[in-house]
Image (cartoon, rainbow, N blue to C red; front, side, top):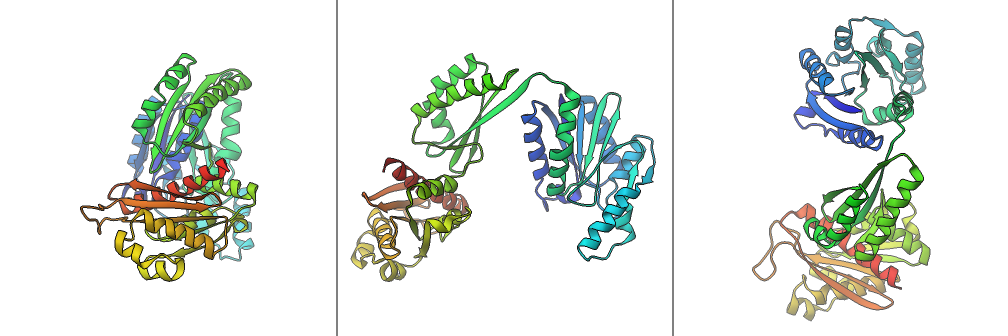
Length: 415
């Protein structure tokens, strides 16, 4: 089934709100085996909505609209849909009572505009919203399906997951299923990774498996997709190729599907009943933030020393002043002493350290912006690595944090 997405909202066009709905919907439709052929972002304007419906209904069998269903005057989607489908609004007393109950349960005043959200086009099939007050709507015209949903992501996702997807699956009667497997890698850029695994990629095409490279700062996701009739057979074939890839790039694969680097490291620390602490200079606490974003991280994370100045490095981490004077804060010698110092002072099995020039200013000819040193100290000694990154401060901090956590991951796997 070919699909199209219409995102309504002036706030989307001016960049005030990021259009995460379209990205999420595209992913969900793709997982169902549907093809998204078009997507548009339009203002809260009747003509824009009508034109988009006309244009996209030519290209697609399923059109999903998000936004414009709120209680304010600029939310005109329902009225416009009434014009498009030649119908009228009717008050749904059940929905109205649900809206009243919603406000009463939160001890909030209710206005007539809130109650008017129970006005629903009579030609649609109602899609109840269990997470808010704006109902979704399902229309059919000329063998096309039109679905209108609230723009609030939490509410939209609820209606899609609870009602729309089961209804679409039942209606489609498609005996083919599309299965995706995602492999998460760190440590190789997209082009270099493609060169290393090119023979493996050739084998995928023989089995009609599609490969997509999905790069982001510090990470390249490899998404395998295979269409077939038997779920077990598809999974076995995909897993066979994944196991072969693990032999080619064993150190680069850190997880699958929704795994995160910090989650994988946390699981390894938990399994081994070991602890970690961080000494951070250029990352300013970003590594500690990643670690503590995982629920239960207090079991293995003791704390962090953000040693931004040289004096803190000396006083809190026992970095030798002569080492700082001779080699500078951004050096292998200093970052290794930082890792050793935080491990000793916080009494953990492992210590992580970062020191570098995150940018965009502060670089020199000898140490340009993006020069970063990272280190791990543990039961088997200390290891360090130099990173040569770019000029984006945010990207440098993120990639550095990923890289030092990956160093710890590899260390944990070897011990």
